[in-house]
Image (cartoon, rainbow, N blue to C red; front, side, top):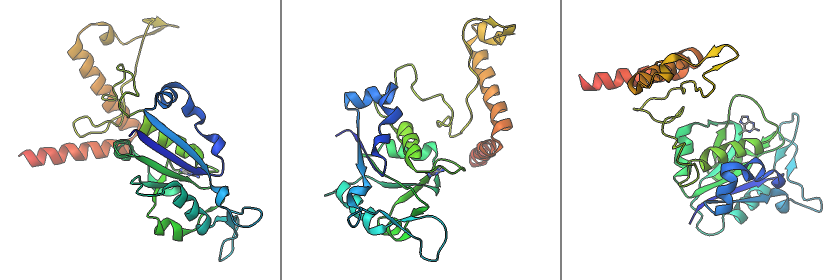
Length: 244
Ligand code: 6GU
C-alpha cells in the first residue's frame, strides 16, 4: 500500500496544484503516492450547505462548525484508518524536517485545511488533531500550507527523488546529529561577469573541498540562523560531556 494523502478543504481544485508537476507529479502518476481532495461543503448544513457560523463571544469573522468538519472527517477516514489527522493552522507546531520524516515514514496523512477565522476547538480536541504551522506569518487558508507539507513528505518517499539528490547532505538532514544550513553551490562557467568560483572547488582536492564546505555551512548557519547554531553547539557540548 503506497503513501496516501487525503485533503479536506473548501477548495479541492487547489490540489494537486503544483504537486502535479515535476518530481512529485511523476511520482503521483507512477502511484508512489496518492492524493484525494475532498470538499468539506458536501457535509454542510441546510439548503445552503453552510460550513461556518459566527463566533460565540463575538468578534470578527466566521468559525468552521464542529459537526460539519467531524462529518467530513468521518467520511474520509471510514474503517480502521491509521493515518494521523493534521490541521493546518498558524497556531500549530512549527513544521520541521523531523516531523516531515516521521510523516513520510508512516502510512500517509489526512490534512484539514481551515478557512475563515478558524475551526471550533472542540472538534480539534475530540479528533486528536495534530496542529501544524508552516511559519510565523498568516495565510488566508491552510491550502498552501498543506501543499508545502505534502511536497516536503513526498520527496522523501522511496523512489521519488533521483539518485543524484539522495537527501543526505542537504540543509536540515541529520548530519552527525546536527542541523546546519547547506554550503553555497557553483557550476560553469568558472568565471562569470568578473566573479570567480572559489579556487578550492577547482583544485580537485576532495578533502580540502569537504573542509571548505563544512566551514561555509558553519559560517552561514551562525550568521543567518543563530537559533540553529545554538542547537548545534548544544548538541556538540552534550556529546563531548557524555564522552569524557
Ligand atoms: Cl498551516 N495556515 C494558515 N492559514 N496560515 C499559516 C499557516 C497555516 N502556517 C503559517 N501561516
